[in-house]
Amino acid sequence: MNMKNWLRAGAALLACIFGLLAFYAFQKADKSSEKATLLTWYFISNDVMDRTKPDAYALTEDEERPCDNIKQEICSILAPDNGYGKPDLNALATSSETHLQQIERAIADLEVNETVHAFRAKY
Image 1: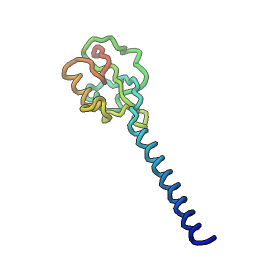
Image 2 (image 1 turned 90 degrees about the vertical axis):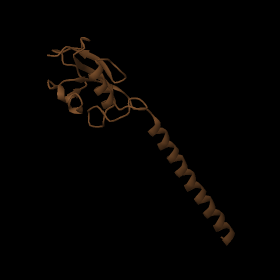
Image 3 (image 1 turned 180 degrees about the vertical axis):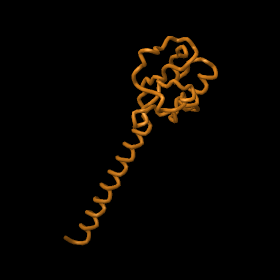
Image 4 (image 1 turned 90 degrees about the horizontal axis):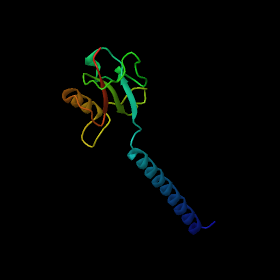
């Protein structure tokens, strides 16, 4: 093989490598822009101070304390999983508020929002 052929082969190889890198970069960008799946989480703690803690939520409702829409305590929220089986309260719920901020606002206003979907009576 002469020098000209080696240069062509090297240029073709570099073009393929850069093409693959660009392809994977666009794939990763597409995945990061996808919105996370929102799950319904139920507040299971007896301590009202736990409302902003991920460990105070579960994917199953407490049958003894169902959501009854009496606006005294948060019952259920919508939030993505944090990867450890708990809600990701630091994820953005809207373009300007996290799920945690929306929980705090719902507690103050006693109104549902994009994150807090139901209330119940305090037990």
